[in-house]
Every structure is written in C-alpha cells, then in structure tokens.
Image (cartoon, rainbow, N blue to C red; front, side, top):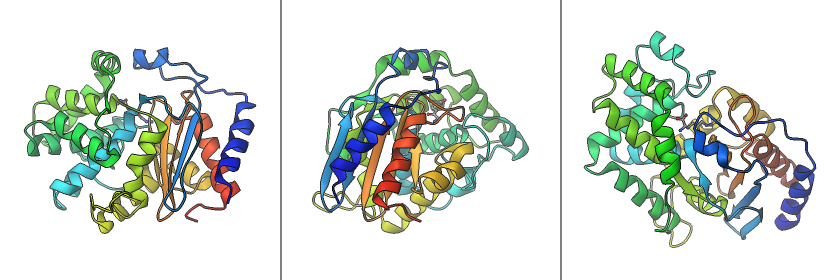
Length: 304
Ligand code: DON
C-alpha cells in the first residue's frame, strides 16, 4: 500500500475543511499556539515512517501523558492499582467532579483527570524522584533523551489548576490520595507539560502497537498482557465522553490531549499521531479525528 500517497491525500482533503473548533485557552499558554498547525506521522511496523506537515514540531502532549503514567504504574504496582481507579468509561467530561462525589472518590478510569491524579499519587509513593523517572521512561521508549517539558506550559497550568485541585482534594477526603495534594498536582501538571513531536509520539506509542516491546532491538518494556489492558482502556476511555464516537468513526485505541494531539495504534500494524490545535466541544482535536477517520477508511486498517 502507498501510505505516503494516502497521507498526502488526507492532508489535501483536511486543509480544505472549514474548522469550527477552538484552541484550548483554559491553560493560557496553550492559546499562544497557531490554530493552523497540522501534522501527521504514521509509523508502520513493517515499512517504517510516513508523515506530512508539522510532524516534526514539538507540542504539549497534555493528556496523552496519561498513557505513559498508567504504563509506569502498571509496571510497579500489581492489581491493587485497579482498586483505587476503575476501568469503566465515564461518559463525562475529562475534568468532571460530579461522578467522583457519587462514587466515593474512586475515578472511573485512569484517563480522566481524577484517574490520572490517582495514578500520579501511586507513582509518587513508589519513586523518590517521580518527575525524573517519568522523563526517563519517555526517553527509554523513544530512545531520545532530548525530550523535556515546556516550562511555560507547566507554569501556566500550575497557576490555573483550580479544577484539578478540587479533584485531588475531594479524593484526599475519601482517602484515595496518600501523598501531599499540592505535590500530586505538581507532578501531574509536569507530566502534561511534556513536549513531543508527532514523530516522537508515534515512536513512543509503538510499544502499544508492538506487544509491549521496542521495535528496534525488541527489548520488552511491558508484557503483552498488560499492553492488551492498556489498549483496552484507550479504546473505551481514551476520548472521554467522545470515546464511542471515536470508536465509531476511527476504530482504533487512542488517546487525545488538549494540546491538539492524538496518538492511536493498530496492534501488530502501526502507531499513528496527529496534531491540530483546534478542539471540538468534547476537547478532542477536530481535524485530528478527521485525519484518523480518513486513514482507517482509506487503508481499510482499523481494528474492527
Ligand atoms: O488537566 C488538564 O486539564 C490538562 N492538563 C490535560 C487535559 C487534557 O489534555 C484532556 N484531553 N483531551
């Protein structure tokens, strides 16, 4: 299959669209990014790299970081992790407080903000330097030590994290946060501020497409059975209250972020990433979803 030709066609098609979405502004620094950025990177297990547009420019990965944090937590904790965070779709927005009160401080899944805050708490209990360990993990799965956080985004979100602070305090009141609330929040915001390009993210997500192992050298990062679980959670919870729509239109496990990125995988076939900052009302990249819908339609390669 001529993947580069398919990507070129997707780029042309998508560039002609009238975008109605808005760049995220509740983290002020994110609103400084041009709405016109558009990049896509496809990394196939059998045939390598294909891309278009701004695929080599780094952007704020935001909630895509939740997949890496969950992977680290599943490496260091056994099943008790899933006593503190569930694996059910929430059907609610990513930063909703309502369900958490009703369900006694147990988040529905690790990809809503509440769930990621619990995952962060478990990593803080395990590691002496969780921020360092988090970056080290990203460096290992990308084989690229230059990846770092964007300091402006980190400081900007820290100043505007009242809703996440509410979530972490509410969970602390239910006994589901063990560490200091401010430190948990700080570590969570740090992870969200990591900046990566589409190419770097597709390389990182290759472990989820490749049964838990790096493609180069085949060294195992996480077992195939744990990857199966992570992919299942991406499929059912990766897009919040739009998880059903993403499955329906795209048909791949994936994860979005309010920086406008989406990473998705086809087990045994490829990892793919897109970046376009304008978000639809559910907080997912409007053109990113369209690019991925076109990819699975034109290649016939979705998991369904
Ligand atoms: O906590 C927040 O609100 C952001 N740091 C991340 C949210 C996010 O990316 C939701 N994804 N679409």
